Length: 84
Image 1 (tube, helix red, strand yellow):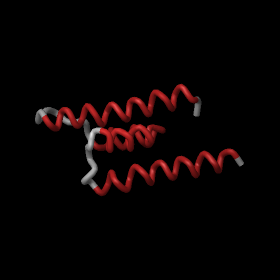
Image 2 (cartoon, rainbow, N blue to C red):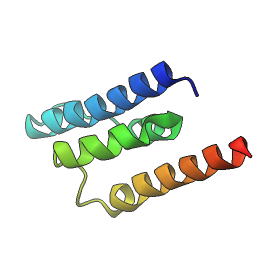
Image 3 (cartoon, helix red, strand yellow):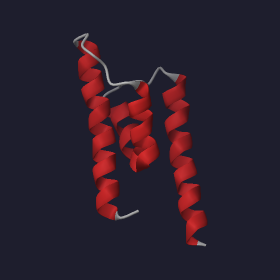
Image 4 (spheres, rainbow, N blue to C red):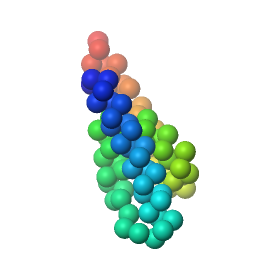
């Protein structure tokens, strides 16, 4: 993937975590979890993980604590496999 795309998708995933945390605190409409996971699947897994810990958001959810690192690991493996 092109570097500018990866920078933008990771920034978006990071910001989505922050926005959802802010909305959760104010009891407003939330960003669906499938959107948060979707941003990670589209290449923003590093940004999503960083946002999860920076904003302390979704850290108690096992699906996020395990799911986001698994997505990142699969993306790394896929990248290495495509380079061969």
